[in-house]
Image 1 (cartoon, rainbow, N blue to C red):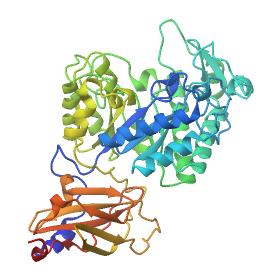
Image 2: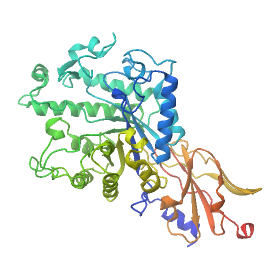
Image 3: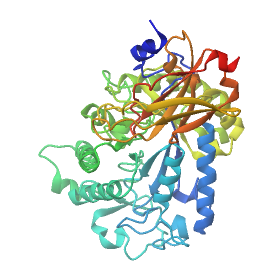
Image 4: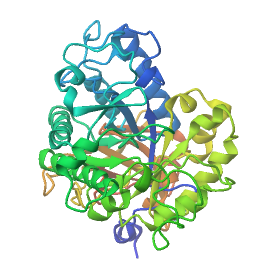
Amino acid sequence: MRVSNLILALFFSIHSLAAQSPKRELRGVWVATVQNIDWPSTRNYNSIKQREEFIDLIDSHHQTGMNAIFVQVRCAADALYAKSTEPWSAYLSGFQGQAPSPYYDPMEFMIEQSHERGMEFHAWLNLNRATMSSKTILSSDHLARRHPEWLFSYHGQLILNFGIPQVRHYIAELVKNLVKNYDVDGIHFDDYFYPYPVKGASIPDEKTYQQYKFPEESLADWRRRNVNMLIQEIAETVKSTKPKVKFGISPFGIWRHQSIDQEDGSPTRAGLQSYDDLFADTELWIRKGWVDYLAPQLYWGTTHKVAPYKALATWWNDHSFDRPIYIGHAAYHLSDLWAPSELAKQLSISRGLPKVQGAIYFSSRQVSQNAKGWRDSLRTKHFEHIALVPPMLWLDSIAPTAPHQVSLTKQKDQWILRWKEGEPSLDNDPPRYYLVYRIQKDEIEPLDKAENMIYKGSDKQIIIDSKWIKSGTGFVVTALDRLHNESIPGTIQWIVPNVVE
């Protein structure tokens, strides 16, 4: 079989066979804005400096090999974006309700910077908090002033009462507004549903429970139903507004213990459970297809006595219901307990699980500041080669058409590879970026190998590095859309032996 035909026949494999160099995996990082954890830095209220900081941050993660960024844009019924009915976040200006100065829209800016670097941008929102503490100075248009009846007080914070239908609809409308007005790749929620239990504190929702419960429905079941209805409404809102926007959640890492649920529980023995303590039935959400992925926060080490990493990662892999799992890794432990080798072990374990299709690190700071050399390790070893975000075929399975008029020409001392956009695809989605592969004659499955990808970007021509100019070397161009469906290859361009030699 000729090499060109072999490429076409074997092209559609999604993952590289090399476990340590997967062609496709999500590589993400959480950027926490609450209390200025990651961005913008504390008391940096100048928007010009904020933008400079973000450019430094996104450049760092792009150079590390990240292909997705999850930025917290709603911390406590506030907004780090302009087109919101909620007040501006105090983390931008020092005062809630005060716009950035000089004025800019942080969301538009961050999306633009992410997409310029070929990275997905996911808008991360907190679901339940209305205030961080009782000392929070609230603007006149804050939710606590407009609808105090929608909130309850718990452990010094005001929390949204999910038992009230108007509250659930309010959150869904916030999401609709965000998806409609911004070119986000995904909507992302963290692990805060009903509040984490605090000894001696109780959730004051008895009146709402009595008003909305089903006959004979327990308080716990009623709370879980509230959260289920909320997640379903958000999912339906996202898909009806922009069907190709992803929706995912990062839950607490333990759903239920096997001692509580012998059939479905994880082999853990103690600690909080998402289902029982936060009233978050994550397994239902992924089984129903309401979420496109889950990113469980597996913040325990490989030698943890009651919640070991491998056992939990395997449990989530086995309960994925054919949706991807992205593991949430505790990079923050590099600041205290862990050596980089611990995270390396976790990454190796997860890459061996077929439904685990990537990793997200919390938080940005430990990675960008190279805590204990972890960024160097990612950049030079674990993320040495380009990786593509895995496709989500239930959202979009139609690939772009192949690039046209691919040519390789020598101009003076440079070899230039050029191509043009192909014909419109069946769904009329234009290519978002292109890939260039370097291949060798008689190479088996060359487009499955991450090490063969030498360019990813939106340009339609590149200068070929002189080190690749060898007889028997060819170059292949493919086109990919926003959900990373890859076209068949354009015409292979081979280095002509007599030209080189």
